Image (cartoon, rainbow, N blue to C red; front, side, top):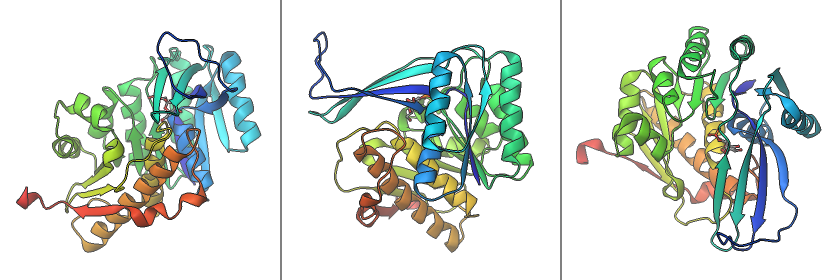
Length: 320
Ligand SMILES: O=P(O)(O)OC[C@@]1(O)O[C@H](CO)[C@@H](O)[C@@H]1O
């Protein structure tokens, strides 16, 4: 089983519009309202690809009730830690004309200290029996880098591979506490490390304690950098237009599958190089399928052939 943890979930509201014009009134078809937040999207992708998954998240207030009802209706296995404050909302507006998405993410209300403890306890207890744990999304006040780092340490000490996909100071906290894998995007990596070059940024997180860093680069694909061995670059040779919300979550799901399968993604052995390339291909294809789907956290089996299109390059650092 793969466990996903979402400290700051959301009710995701998504609208598709013909063309978004600032300051104008738009008449639009009914939007979608769904249980979201990065870890819940990761869990949906894992389930859609046939993996056994359990999602842990917080939920409070009327929006929390809505989130719970949606999870129950979807049949996604979940465990919710109750909070006094209401679950946040996010808004995604997909502009069909230019194929771009505008996003408004509420910060999310603070967790009380007992709630943060209950979340960490649930994640650590359920995570002990997991094949991998993915902790995803922004951190709400009350569950910050210290709480994240303590949870990573507990899981790693229990021998469970841990993937962290967050932003802000949580990125460095996860690296320093020994998270197995990190999945920042280019901007999150640069903000956390102060390094503009993604390869340099990834190396600095590895030096702090992570074993493998996967950097998502949007239309430019992604980079898989292990502690040893050649980094791998993967990309689709064409640009896809659609809803990029949740594309990174599909990458995290692919990393979780590799780690749950026991793949070595960080050594300089031949098998590890193959595993990095396999992960890079699958993660790129899943993330491309996510872009083509209308809502975050979805993939389609109709997109299976995208994997054949992915171009893989081993980076020869001596030649750089
Ligand atoms: O504010 P965060 O936690 O960074 O991101 C939240 C969010 O935009 O990420 C998902 C897409 O990755 C959405 O479903 C979700 O609501």
